[in-house]
Image (cartoon, rainbow, N blue to C red; front, side):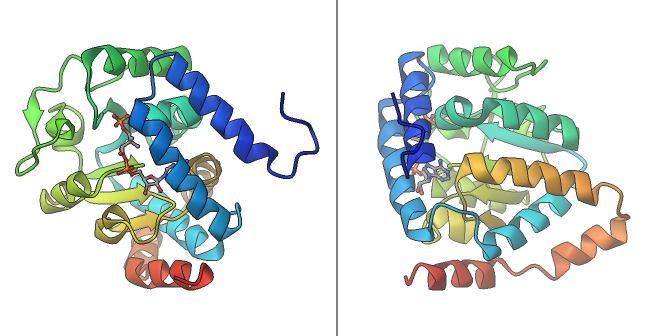
Length: 242
Ligand code: PTJ
């Protein structure tokens, strides 16, 4: 359907993927709207990974490698757009994968689990074991697995809402966001924010994890210590003139 030489082919292809995920019951109605907001920011940043995002990706890789119990949180949009990359990243960091939905229904949680298992993920948390609760959070996102997000020391939260990001930070977890909106509360509250499109950022994050795996702990800690999220977000805002 999309002509091979269309200048915005990739963006249109992502839309198709999301709509396909919607038809398969992975994506919420609201997820389609959220994607549109992301697209608008992506247009402004030039639909490519910018330098500040690369710094965040490096810090995120270091944080994930240093973590004792890293968990990747997956919602409907993430499952529809990037299930394969999520599976690969989890393998590379020896991390867990947990389904966590804002518009949670058991049926959709099971669909997301099905999608992840389809790309080779062995164990998916958060579907039938979301028995723990994130304190001071009132959305459905508060429901988490004890084995997963509840006890995690580092959580990757792509396409998140600000409330839960803030609550995870309050719980003392190192929190890494992927969000195209550098002004969002999630972007501002997370320890590390990758302002980039999810499907572009994840392969780069996987590559960086592979690069940094051979480095010692002191090197990884130094990367984290010299990383300044506020500064990186400021650079990103400057790039898009906000
Ligand atoms: O599947 P559920 O029920 O958990 O719902 C998922 C959504 C995304 C609908 C839910 O988390 C939500 O409402 O999110 P928000 O508050 O709209 O925030 C989503 C953020 O992700 C926004 O700041 C968007 O700019 C950003 N975003 C959207 N698509 C992408 C993105 N960031 C990176 N890559 C994208 N593809």
